[in-house]
Image 1 (cartoon, rainbow, N blue to C red):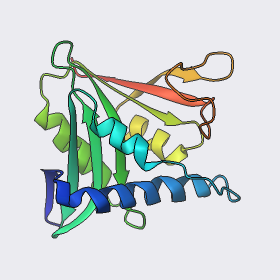
Image 2 (cartoon, rainbow, N blue to C red; image 1 turned 60 degrees about the vertical axis):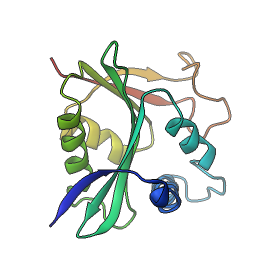
Image 3 (spheres, helix red, strand yellow; image 1 turned 90 degrees about the horizontal axis):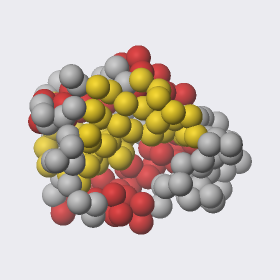
Image 4 (cartoon, rainbow, N blue to C red; image 1 turned 90 degrees about the vertical axis):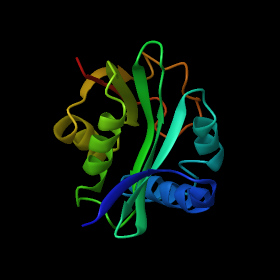
Length: 168
């Protein structure tokens, strides 16, 4: 397998957004069969890409984009955030996500802490972050302990795990 992690280009954007939305939508559909609303609006992806310190990457395997990630780097604190990571639907469980993450860690060796969040129902993500990448669940958002950054109308928005990975 010829794997590369490359910076996302403007030309990649339509496929990147479509594939990410499809991966998130089909992931949610596994737990919510009757779901008919959009899980990841394009506006959320664009908002993430426009954050200060944002960087986006694509995973290219044998010449085909099969995943991607958006991270946000805080150059002052080096407490960095993984906003989104996806593997193209139908190509999961082949080590693509882990290869992407390993390369991202190499690109940002000064990182002190990585942080990310995932909804409670995304069992594959929880397994991936804890068992494959070495993150630790550090907070569980729920109706009695809300994350003020998550909109009330977001599917699963009341139930989220926050993960951290200390690099020191």
